[in-house]
Length: 420
Image (cartoon, rainbow, N blue to C red; front, side, top):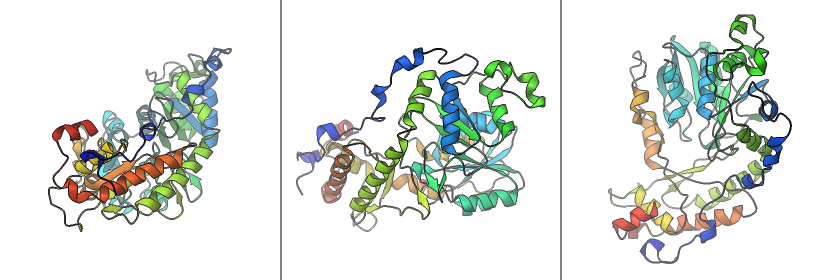
């Protein structure tokens, strides 16, 4: 192969393929749709109602509710299920901190369950950590690969505790033919930033429990439908005031999300095609490990994770993953990444301060190993998806074939700084 771009060679990735513009069709939205009669009502209705009905149908649940962020949707899910006031909740040891931070705000106590090779909660560790104090188990489907929900459901049912999903990576992912977000006692999604379905900012909650749905309304949608949305007698006194918060989704975000739903199945199909291609290119590369997709699972491929495994390549113990990333970025493959804020949760003092005092083992050995070696790349869709995939795979192949040149690090500190 040719010389590394980091050391003066020609980059592998064309300039117009270095970054991917997601969602591809965001500029096609017709703002005129928001000028129609009563597009949104302060007390609920319009485009937001349309989205919530469509989301409930799409996610296979009875009720859905929109929020201004995925974090707010999780907050409402936990609040409506009574996870507060020192309730003990098992949460993932590896993931994004927003899965757990709403529980801290509600006063719950955290118990961290370690992860498996996919970054998902390991049911074996959940079984070790569960106790008579446990009120709920919260899971994430990391990078869009669903958890072992049969095993987790069995544990939750035996212990008579709630099982809740943070499906923020898993829009449309399937576990044994069932969609993520319909696999437990309730779910929340982010539809913000670069999530597969994105409104720029926003979140969705889904549940089959009318009581949970109405409590979630009271938390973030006060005076919804002028108070008529609340039907349960014990909650009726709060129908207008709610509990005082307004966490509604902006109508433009609702429009963006609603307009992506009809074509989303094609996006999923194209992401699956790309993930299959990328896996075939990366498997067999010395120093790269690609976990096998679990059986009976169809991921949504929010990202494609893999691991840098240099243990058998005879490299210096000082060899750095950052050197590999610097070389990849110099090749123009600038969206290769080592997850940063998605990490072992003991990285965050705000969370560790809320660990249950009753838990003896707070180690996150698997999560820390995952974090030390994990890398990820986008999973593209659209007409040029295979061009992105082939050039990014070629960049990784080139860099991995030149590892010996990286043992001295980037040619200069300025190259490393300029490539990240």
